[in-house]
Image 1 (cartoon, helix red, strand yellow):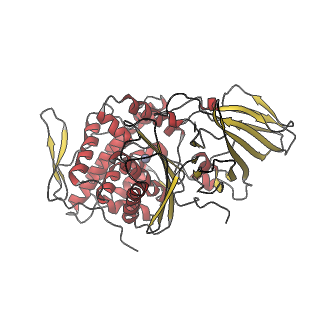
Image 2 (cartoon, helix red, strand yellow):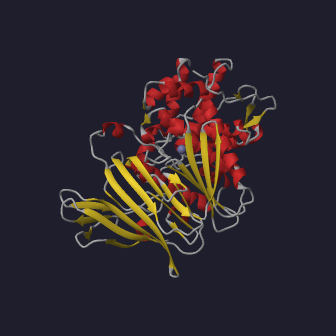
Image 3 (tube, helix red, strand yellow):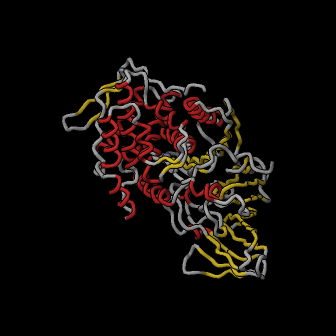
Length: 526
Ligand SMILES: [Zn+2]
């Protein structure tokens, strides 16, 4: 089959437009370094999000796929490295097409500044400017084959430090870009079918290609929805590949630079996270995932991870270890494979309290289960979320107010993460308490995974999550989610895992106990 190895089960790692904005906020806040706690929470706030599958369902199967071909050729001129890109596609019957240039991603704007020498490779196609910097109009004889070329170059100077990695990175040892900051393309709907072909030419002998659609070979193909390309990562450079596999999870680590840990150590730690999550969800399908690890040009002080189609890109400072924050971020992203993507389609921002918040609650529990956190360390991280929630001025925003405020561009972007995580904590403890520790939130999560209901609205989620709880609890749950009522912090962590302590100034935290036997359950085999 011509389709790449990486057309895989993690089929929906994608971003919505709002996510880009949120990421922008995160980047700026991380960059400020002004508040450790805030940084921690933000560092744990990954950049993923939600795509609504309904569009995919409505796409006609009979529609002809858009065929696109890209070639990438690096050029290491003394004036600066660049990547020459040639795009070929079939023109329309009308004889004109909209050409879309990169504009914004991850809080970065004017991304088209990395595009130089945009031109048609033949004389029959004319490129016309429009009022929008990110849009050109192509005119050509009907049904012509269109060949457009451009050069991608860094539009930043100085050393590679956060947040420059959010723009294209073209250097003499690596080229890294993604579907949104580096690919010019004709206008295509997110769920439209495409057949794409990516080829890398004239790469230095020691360069290896590592992309969402394949690693190692110099050409990759992908057939599927355009959003998978839009959210894909493309890279080539002096990478070292480490492949590892556990019970159906195949991981490829593409690392470059020298680290204080070995590639194998990093790969094994990453794979541990996958292993525990697969175990948790009872996953039996084979999965493949690429992790690209590359250094910032600084020794300490920064890290940034972003998930793409079937891949995760991680920038670390050169002398940094693979720390808990990065592992937690990865655990978060991997958890999205199931919440929400295997569960069904969600309602975007309106259900982030669940997709992001509950994932935030679970990400450190996964590390705990993987033995990557001790129980006191886990509680310490939980306390940081508790403090962040408790001290948030936006804590009592209703869902409607928060969504409206988002339209203004000035919301507290991480509210659904921390509020959702605290709601998950409350719910987990209610279920444990009511069932004398026979059941937990895990059972409700597994029920959602198995449910035939695949359109997950807030109503459907509440009905499923509160199943078996007294009416007053399901009413409280709705009130936390919709009205922004202050979530009641459980007095103790079941079973015998810690007690709530409230300081004189009213701020709460949990004190872990020694006898805790908390465990994530593996889903019962069916
Ligand atoms: Zn997330």
